[in-house]
Image (tube, rainbow, N blue to C red; front, side, top):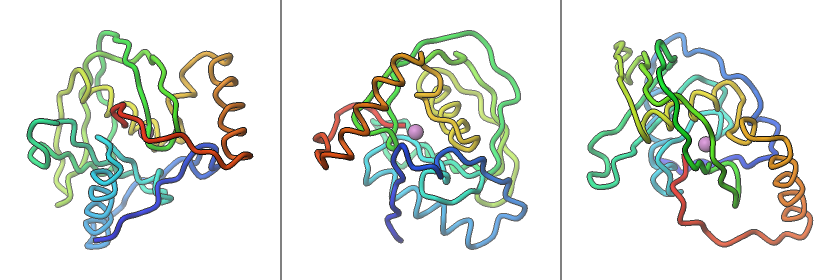
Length: 179
Ligand code: NI
């Protein structure tokens, strides 16, 4: 088990598009396990491989606060096969320091992915799980939630983030759910 470093905006590696995994191997299983530990330690409810500098289409999620480590999703090559409705959710992200914003997403999604055994599975999701799935799949496509807000809000954040990096003053930990 190893804790991995989570890349933070504006790291350019967060904007890269991840490649599909052609074979689920022992190395894939190990990466998934390390990603899960990294996600729990952060703490967060979702993590994409892109966020730890690995450009493979792998995502882990656990949005069940009441029963941690019970409903864990380990998804390889996930893609959205159906989406319906709309909702607005206040999102935060482990790669976006000290910022949350309302983002419009589909309310229901159906996602098809391989599990850690290379078996195909279908997930029907709504609410936070649906939001988290869309957010993580965005990461695999090199997109952050701040790419889905108004340019004005994004520019304000970008300026504030640059100042943080310039002054070396990082904000204290947030209590927001991070995906
Ligand atoms: Ni995120």
